[in-house]
Every structure is written in structure tokens, then in C-alpha cells.
Image (cartoon, rainbow, N blue to C red; front, top):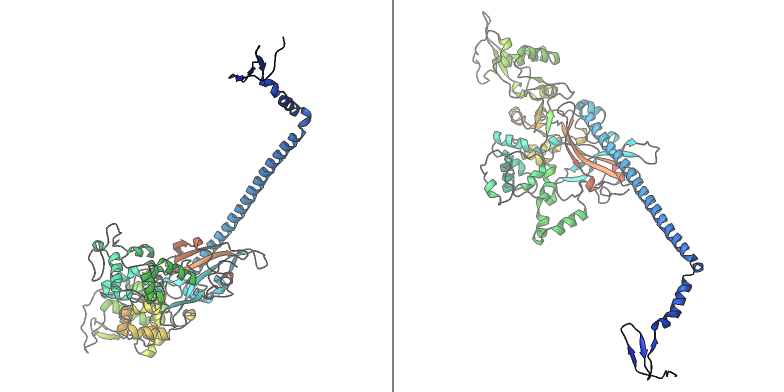
Length: 573
């Protein structure tokens, strides 16, 4: 029997097998038959003779991976090499900074007269500018250091930085905050008056600063004690601050007034720094910015210090003779070794018997002592007490009392002849270092106006007549007694001013820049050195690396020293 394959109803089962029925037995058509061509093609693709290109692809991938690994190794090695070079360069620049510190301490260990011979430390390009530490003048790359300080222009009504100099700032040119409280104890109100000379200072801020430093909790007239500060704010320390930065917590003290807006600490406010500062200010403050007195002068940090003192020694470096020494025999021996026997005898007699009464013709006879050579009755307050004085020597046995006239004549001609030499060799202060006195040869007018007893007229005379700062050490004004010797004050005025004035100073501040001739890499620091004791020591150090080099190469090498924009602010060669 023949099975018909005509179309018949098609049924599907879940197994995917087609069943065709045409009036007879079922005809099974499997889908497997339909897969035979595909299987054949698959078998042909798996032929070993068709896989040679796969090996090339694998080799290529391996080469790429190895190349990348080599690149990473070379790249990391080059980075390490650059890092090692940078560390080496920074180590050399650190050595340059260290060399600058050592040079300064060596210079400050000399006496003032010895420093004069080599050019001093006010502006000495030969010693302090572009000193080579690594390399020499023929080297392609040289690492050097330069020591800089601001040059203050006093020819205008307001002090301004007119440029730079290769030297240091004498801290005795500034108001010592530690000394201000002593001034106030001597003359109440003098500390506030001194602070009011600063640009933009007012009564409230001045009194708040003094309240912050004094040890009591009594509010000054316009001051501020703990109850005047808002909760959560730091109250008065009732102690001298360790750094000027601490004054930022005082009521009324702003960063702009204290430090200015010179952000990179290169003694110059650029237009960019001014614009950035103004952008941070409120609109109301921007409108009054031009009226702020501090914006037209120097910041307070140029006038204030916490460290100023002078070594109590003579101009040639010898210890001064202490006129109030209790051993009169030793005192007479020391005086006779430096001065005449007449001077030595008068000073010892003054210590024994005191000054005679100048108002009567018959001075009172003091009590006679059995051993006057070992006892002293009178303390000499200032060396100016000896000028024109008289001493009554009591009689002994048949010898009548006698008047001993001072060999220290007070007429102007004689004062010019001997006073500075004598005053420089002796002292009435037993301390080895005298803190807080103001250098009248170099201090700016604002600082001088704050000294008790000077007065505006005398300050103007000093500013007009004192020599240029670069030659102060070379002239005859090496002791504050020149005010008296040249007739600017009388003896009574000089006695009052002696506690506040000096022409010396042994604590200095400046910037040391370590730099390379061949690139912008540099290190910079601010440093303060105390030379009141031997050897000198560093008492303040501030790292300025985060502010960049701060000065262009032509400034650091001395080709140009100007505060003009672009000349001192550049950070690239």
C-alpha cells in the first residue's frame, strides 16, 4: 500500500517533531535533518588547517602587553629620576639657605666697628647678594643665596617700600610690644600714644591691644577684656604674644592692617594682589577701602616687633664699664685703664659722696665713712648725671672739706670733644643686653613720634639732620648721646630720653632666598637672629616656599632692585 504524502493536518509536540497524517500511518519528520548542513559547515570551520592567524593575534597581544609593561617601567624610572633630581636640587637649595644663615650669624658675631670694615649689614651687595654655593662663575648651573630686606622711603608723608636692599632689618627700628608696657608704667598713656602713631590705629584698637597684653583684667578707657568678646571667641591672653599673628584675635585688628595684602611676602603689593583682596571684600568695605589709612601706608608689622635688644658693649666690641659696680676699687682700676686718672677719681668720689647741692655756695657735708674705698652711697642713674656735677669731699683730720669739680664739662664744645667716646664705653645698666630701645638713626618717623619725650619738633629735626642710613655706622653718631653733643637736646632732656633711645641693635630680620641660575626652583625663608649673646642664635624662622620664589632673577642677582610691578614679583627667569 502506498502512503500518500498529500497535505494533511500538521501537529507539533513539545519535542519539536512534526507528525503528518494522511489517512494512514503517521509520518515522522525530524528537525534534525534540517540541521545537517549547519553541522557540516561547523565541522569545516574546526579544520586545523584554517587556524594559523590566531597565533599571530596572540603574539601581537603579548607584544602589546610587554611593550606597555616596558613603557610603564621606563615611565616610572623617569619619574623616579626626576624626583631624585628634584630632591637633590632641593637639598642643594636647603644647603644654600643654611649657608646664608651661617654667614649672617658670623657677621653678627662681629663688633659694629668690625662689620663697618667689610661694608656693614644694612646694604652690602658684595657679601649678601648672589653668593654661589654650588658651582662657580664658569658653571652652566649655579645655586646661590641672596639676603633681602625692604628699603623704606621716608621722603613722603607716608612711609613706603621704595625697593629692596641686600641686608637686614634692625628690629630696634620698631616698637617693641614687650617694652610698651614698661613705657606705660613709667609714663601712663605713653603706650597708647605710641600705638596711635601707626597708620589706621584708633583708641579702641590701641587699648584693646594693651588690654590683651597686660596681666590684669581691668578694662582700659576704650579697651576690651574678656566680657567684651563674643561667646566662643578667644579672650585676652593677659600676656605678651609669642608672635604678631596672635594679635589677629584682638578686637579691631585685621589681617590687612597688621600684615597688609602682600600675599607672597616680597615687600610689594601688586595690582593682582590688590584686585584679589578687593574681590573678597564686601561692597561696603570696597567703597571705603581708599579711605583706610593703612591702605596709604605700611602695615603695622613694619612698625611692631616682639624682639628687639642691643648688646651692652662698646662700639669696638669691648664690655662696657658698669659705673654702679659695688666694688669701687675695681671700678677705679677699670676706668683708669680706659680714661684719665682724673675721670676715674671723680666718678668714684661721686659714687662715694654723691653730688653736692648746686643751689648753695656751701654744700652740706656728708657723713664721713671709715673705709670709703669699699662702700658706695650713690647710684648713678644716667651717665649724664656726671656732666657739670660737683662732689664735696669731707675733711679728715686737719684737712678741710673741698669741692671736686667735674671734669665732664657741659659746654657744647667740650661735649662734642669727649661725650660720645665716654658714653660708649660706660653704662649704668648691669644687664648684658638692653631690650626695647628705639634706634634713632634708622627708625621711621612714626616710631620716633611714639617715643615719650621726643615731641614732633625734635622728631623732625632728627629726621632732617641724621645721616643717610647707609653711612650711619661710618659717621660719628654711634651713640645716642649725639643728640646732646650736637645741641638738639639739653642735659635734662637727655636724662629723660636715655631709657628709650639707642643707635644700636643686635636682633635682625631678613629674607634668605636660595635659588638656581638655570630655573625657577627656589627656597625662601624669613629669619630673625639674636646677636645679644655669643654665639648668635636664630629666634624666629618662617618657611616661605609656598609663596614661590617671590623675586625675578635680575633682582636676586642685583641687576635691578625696584618695586616696579614685574621687576620684583616675577617667579620665572
